[in-house]
Amino acid sequence: MTVATRFAPSPTGLLHVGNARTGLIAWLFARSLGGTFVLRLDDTDTERSTPAFAEAIERDLSWLGLVWDRLVRQTDRQARYDAAIDRLKASGRLYPCYETAEELSLKRKTLLNRHLPPIYDRAALKLTEAERAAYEKQGRRPHWRFFLEDGAIEWVDLVRGPVRFEAKDLSDPVLVREDGRPLYHVSSVVDDIDLRMTHIVRAEDHVANTALHVQMFRALGAEPPSFAHLPLVTDVEGKGLSKRLGSLSLETLREEHGLEPMAVNSLLAKLGTSDPVEPRRHLEELVAEFDWRKFSRATPKFDPDDLGRLNARLMHDMPFEEAADRLAAKGMRADEAFWKAVRPNLSRLDDVGEWWRVANGPIDPVIGDPGFLERAAALLPAEPWGEDTWGEWTGTVKRETGIKGKALFMPLRQALTGRDHGPELKTLLPLIGPTRARARLEGKTA
Image (cartoon, rainbow, N blue to C red; front, side, top):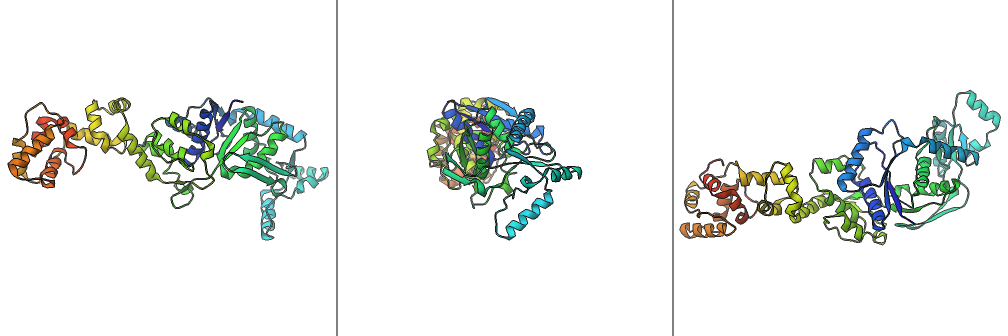
């Protein structure tokens, strides 16, 4: 059996870290077994789905490196849903219901007031032909419910272990709206059958839906696939992420925060597992480490600060070969010496611009003691300059002036870089060069 998984976002908004985690884990699982990964856009909600959001989902997944083997749009598959609906109607598993939204709401409230679960009472099954005709004459159009057969619904979940529902405790789900449009349940199951999905990876808020789907698979002549339900991610205080999703969209993390995709992958792949969260440079490393047995049912907590730390570590280890083209795209003709000098001080690649200006100017030097800096300028060594130049020069200045420690180094750093901290000056000073260094020590913009 070739493993096949899918990620099925609705293009009704931007992809955020919660649903991106589901897609990433499905992708890692498929790739760990040499399987296939399908991107399915659940775009049947025509009022809220937009091409712009669909394009954003594709862009975000591509940024993460999650290449899909096939792209499917539900709006292209209406004929398949219609055929499945007709089949369920013919077998008696789909029955028409004429209650209005207000009538159903009243039924639910009545049951809840009696401390009973709000399960549909199947009143529609008791309607006579004459009663149905009367409703039709009134202009009512039915919605259609799936008849759940009595008995236990069971499966062994890859994350949750054995799961069991009793059909009598569930409400017959609505599969078709009054206007004839199919709802999520039927579209999803038909797609999973047609696309030959072997494993469904999704969040734990779909567990009850899965119980419905198990019967629907069988009603349509298919065996259910395997399931993995991931615990929902919360923030560090244990609260849901829903109110913060705008700031946690992948687009925001990429465009506004300048994060590396592997910082996001490295964190999301390990949330809720027994593995430590460490930066990984390539998806292949995460694929090799993937194992369902590492996943816990405990609620994972997402801390955005962890992304910043992972991103900084990726910057500090990034080889020049990987950075060169990206620096060039920013208009920097940087060499390896520059990259090695500044990368320990980068939290994100966008920070490199600050140190490019320090190395190449112009900057406004910070002049604290003009007399001291004038003497230091006079003691600058002759070219060529290398990593030993800083130590030789400061040693000479110390001997000649008697100034040492912070009183020696801080004024020199402030004059040469305009900043109180930054890359080691033994690597930065040769990049600044004698002409700029002398001008800055003399208080000139250079």
